[in-house]
Image (cartoon, rainbow, N blue to C red; front, side, top):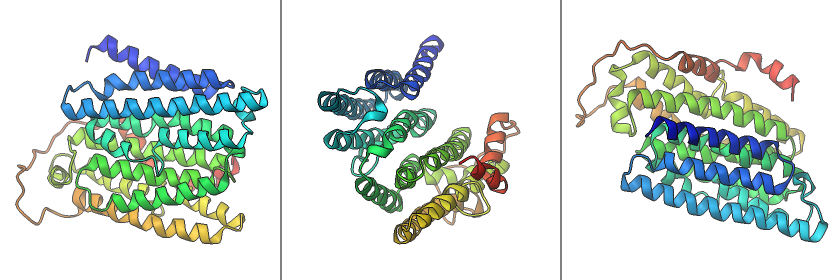
Length: 346
């Protein structure tokens, strides 16, 4: 892709995200979402592969429908209450429509079907943007409107997202699809707590972004996109694969790694809210995700492939790991000791 075009699209992504996050009026928030959608489409379809074009088309249709629902819910609320302010969403119908629209934007169950397909059709760098940066504007809108939304509906969507995200990732062999279902599962954890402690949702999102960025950058360095390729990538960069192992276990939420912190705090908050059955259910459903993270980690580092594969062993490379990846890897695995500092700000 032309460097000037890439610069324009990247700048548009930053502009759209900033507009949505900083706006108080529904129209400017909607405009920011539209700028984001139009900026990411060329990045999805830049390989000109039929699967990439299909992914871009699916993404455009879903995001256009979700943006229309956002506009419709805000107009309905303005019609009944006279308020265009984002925090003044009070009409029940508008709240339900907005919940559906943001669920479509994020890929929450039952509006999750597009996300694995779009991620599978995208390159790893674009997949990283779709999994992290493109979710920030909808998450911020969810954060601002959370007091007005229906807690029962959010709880059902969160439980279904955690369950289906773990369940559907079990039999996948494509790494991008596994990471897509991982994202859906993590969104369930973010949604379950947003009604009671929205800052925990943002903390979960930030830490998820750190860990996912590390995983995507490691896979991009090794040029691996499916499990059979991952099995033979250990010879190329052993140190990087060791960090990938720790980051995957951190994404699974195992102590004493960073990923344990948001799950621990969310379970603690749910218990404080007298929602012990919900906390137990979310904890049990996270075991499904743990299985496919362990399978990824097993394929990456722990064992040699037990059978002959069609992929030749890769040569060990002396190319140094980028500094940003090293920083991300450290943050993705070792933030738990400073959890008292993090919890004091929540």
